[in-house]
Amino acid sequence: MTLTQAYILLIAAILCEVVATGSLKATDGFTKLAPAAISVIAISVCMFLMAHVMQILPIGITYATWSAVGIVA
Image 1 (cartoon, helix red, strand yellow):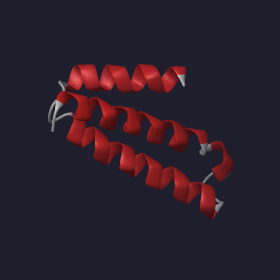
Image 2 (cartoon, helix red, strand yellow):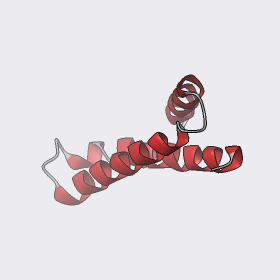
Image 3 (cartoon, rainbow, N blue to C red):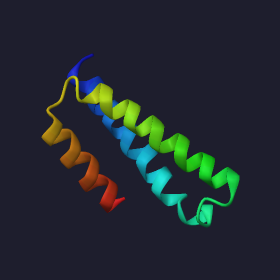
Image 4 (cartoon, rainbow, N blue to C red):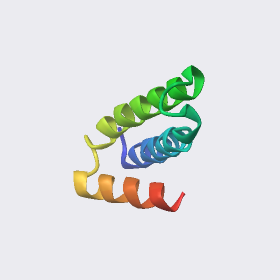
């Protein structure tokens, strides 16, 4: 994996995290199946992508970028 691919995966992970946190309110305490499934699947994909990104990028840069852009989004 190249550095460019790592950053592309990081962007995808950030988008998944935004989808996951955005759908949390719609879960109504995880009592509604569809939004809860979207949230769980999106955060799982996010963590999977982050694991691959951290093979190339240092953990500090990865986590700082992920959290900062996720908060702004």
